[in-house]
Length: 489
Ligand code: AMP
Ligand code: MG
Image (cartoon, rainbow, N blue to C red; front, side):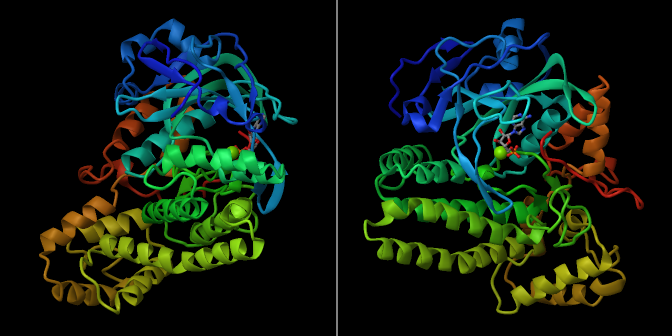
């Protein structure tokens, strides 16, 4: 990437400011606002090392001051990114209201990583908000984003959480914090919508070429059509991965969909326990717009908004530009279905293809729903045991299904060991269960991070055998209240 500044090094940081070189409609120079008493709460040494940073040099008071926004590292040009977005279907101008991008760090493999401070104070885009974040939600993002990374799912990462020594007003005063987020970029569908709303085709083109160079090096960066197809394929892969582990993003607004294909903006997200495709956790998602089973069609809806924004770059002739968009959006469902089925086959141990597989898998899902069976544990039982004598296969709606699966497996040339091996790699044993996450965060907010670190450690190898009846791998006890998640935290 080209940058106007020479890289600057300190603690291993190699800063560039390539986003700052984009046209001015995309950013507003904004420093992080200092806080009262920066204190490190959690720091990700492994991530730091993989980024070519020096962990020891990052665990100093000077670097805690950087992670809290009290010191701006030499060589950075902090900015708030401007973007628009459809929030629950309604278009609006947004932008970083409580975050600043310090710049991009160059990792040893020469890839650029956005280093963003979240909760760093008010910006031009803060509207009525205070620009701040509470400790609990920032630790929640840290925990779940790191769990997603360990699950092998593209995601923004979390490098550090610094307490601010200040309170933020939510429903009651809460301890404040700043999260240092690392991402392939923070370019969103909404960033393209922002350029389109300005009817600034030159800026739109600059953004597309910049994004293509950062995320799709395999295509010609000037080819908007190849760009759209590549972006669409990335989203399909991502959402198939979410469906695989029962992840519900919760707020798939177009400003929360990253062109990189990473999961970003961990707000009201949560993992499903009992399988129910209508599962929603967010307190404000009354219509179930972002329910588990709706995620594929919402991703398509968001991609349609991306296509709308890109129309002037597809073709000068609007009719042929629209034809291109419609044709490719028309391919989405079949492409998604194909990848989803391949993923579900692996989850159930079907290593070759038969015509009846889709129906067999659907009957399994329907049976799980009818039985109120736990999504993660049921697949894991299938992967690691003979299953027939284990709940939920020993009784109820899945009792008749299981022998048919055994018969189906007997028709494939692969051994049971091969099937189990593939299944164990696709079916995690440990996920961030809501009841565990909530308990760990409550302790951490009260100053005890023991449970938080235990959970983080268990989530770092989610596909390994956690040992018999490891409590961190078990579903919530019966009667556990349903988790409710919140935006605006
Ligand atoms: P989100 O739901 O996290 O994607 O946020 C939607 C928009 O609200 C983004 O523009 C955020 O920057 C902004 N926002 C969220 N919380 C705050 C806050 N406490 N202060 C200012 N802006 C905020
Ligand atoms: Mg957002």
